[in-house]
Length: 409
Image 1 (cartoon, rainbow, N blue to C red):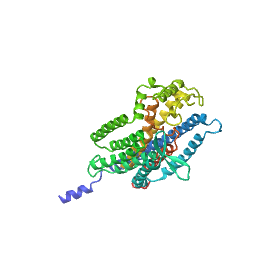
Image 2: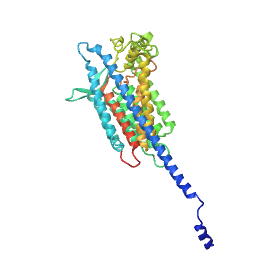
Image 3: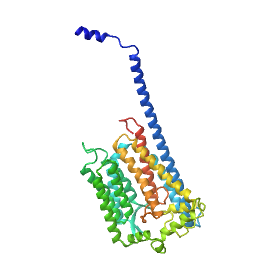
Image 4: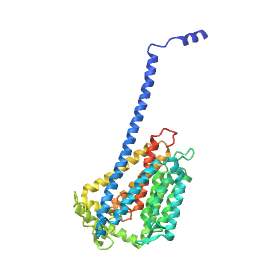
């Protein structure tokens, strides 16, 4: 038997077997290389789409802010609002470049400290913040002569903190364990509660909604998320019933035409802007609704200015820009090699696109007025710079996706 086994080991292989095995290995390596090249090409396309969509939206925003604020400063060559918006855009561009170079591991380490800082700033806003329009939402920076909205930073910090918390699985639990789910909801609920006290119901809903969205993406059980959604809906209803100004907003939304000179005035003027714009608009700079007819034309209702002056075509370009941003952000998230950057990219994409969807719904009369800005378009330095920071983090995730596994990105 031993001689038979030895003889069998010495038997020569069939002709061509060795060459066939080598060819199979080469074909497998070639297939892996092709898949890697295809993945990198998709990643490059996503990064390009993200950059182009942001540049498009920021460019449209600069033109719209100039057009909307020029009537407010007829005695000046350039409107002060536009100059401040342009400066914030330049600062935001620098923020994108810096944030894109920060490694993902550093964002993970900064997540909870940044969330804590944002919570302190929200508390300081309630104590010593600047009041305006019936709310206390701005915090003045001593010596620099400008104020910012801490809630904008709180939204980004909350996404970072929740993504960091959910970045690794609970042991052998496939989705999200109960304790971690409760902590994630607390990370969203704490700043949301402080936002309600300003009062700022719109951003409070966004804060808690972003935490719930990340829990859903992380694989949390739907039943507690649905329970949170139901409870949140009840609390919003109670808040609206107890706050006369919030109730008036809802009444103005439900029947704006019968209240066209009161609660429904802003929405009716937005409808007029959309109607006047038609398909191609009345021309950039030639809109009339911004001439003291449409309140907050350069902030919350900037899309109405775009609709009047560039028509349906301009509105579709804006919505298409956000759609491209959404697709690019989701593709960057799906290409992530680890759980934290995946959740982080999803969260930053939602931070940019969910408020855009809600803002568009408000100005078109699909939702009650919430006081949410349109990212990259509305005048608002806090919103613009934080939106640019979110874009920079998306670029950071895309950069990490291209790095080999285990390498520092």
